Image 1 (cartoon, helix red, strand yellow):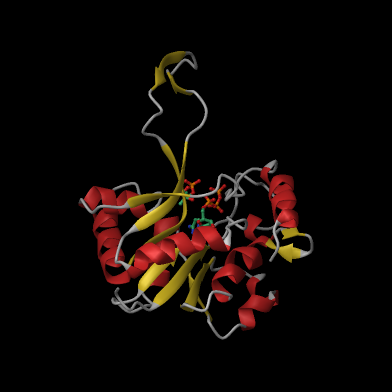
Image 2 (cartoon, protein in one colour):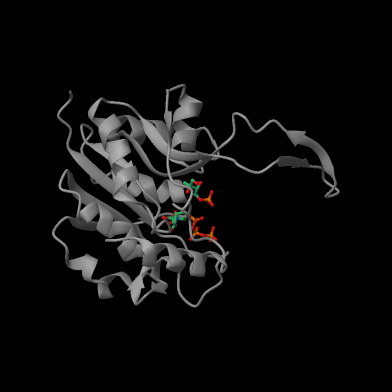
Amino acid sequence: MIKQRFSAVIPAAGIGQRMAADSPKQYLPINGKAILSYSVELFLDEPSIAQVVIALHPDDHWFNQLAISKHPKVTTVIGGAERVDSVLAALAQLSDDDWVLVHDAARPCLTPTDLHKLLTLAQKGESAILACPVRDTMKWAGATGLIEHTVDRRALWHAMTPQSFNCGLLRQVLKDAVNANVHVTDEASAMEWAGFAVRLVRGRYDNLKVTHPEDLPLAEFLIARQTR
Ligand SMILES: Nc1ccn([C@@H]2O[C@H](COP(=O)(O)OP(=O)(O)OP(=O)(O)O)[C@@H](O)[C@H]2O)c(=O)n1
Ligand SMILES: C[C@](O)(CO)[C@H](O)COP(=O)(O)O
């Protein structure tokens, strides 16, 4: 068993274009508390996580109003133009030997059970992400909007967060991928590109990313049912 120092990185520098709300979606309230607070508190409450680095938009004027901003484990950095730039800015605060869990600010419904699945693998030095098998019939769309064919879904998964890696390795691979103009939508995609093994860990379907307006009441319902 490897003795790891765990840290969390929370990319929270997005503007929530698809949500089209008055403030970035991570600051929208659910039962009076910001989405970002739910996403971060789980990591603050986890004793094995030493530090939580949150990447914020340069024009952010909401974060300092949240109670989590005063927490001793929390530090912030200015994020970048793309999610990967925000993650890289946060990783720069951590040491190479840390083990890091990257979790979207916009996923407030993560459960401690799913978080612990990744921490257990991290103790063994295994890179891993939470994910769920796709459950609908999948169609490949042609340019005209007509179906070209039905995709074999048996090997298809939805990638979620947290995504968990050695910090030094992740930082190097993300930098290399960005320099090579790879489109990096999640940490695992850079790791795959660089040829590293990443385990898919079956998580809960309700670890949803609040993306569109219709996701908000769903997140509200799910959080109300969780015992925190
Ligand atoms: N330059 C960026 C872009 C995104 N994110 C973060 O990455 C996570 C996942 O991104 P997404 O859901 O796409 O959020 P937004 O970019 O805010 O949404 P949209 O694409 O609709 O604008 C979010 O927590 C978001 O704040 C970030 O830190 N820095
Ligand atoms: C990292 C991620 O949440 C995995 O599902 C996702 O890729 C980031 O958001 P986007 O909607 O793909 O921009």
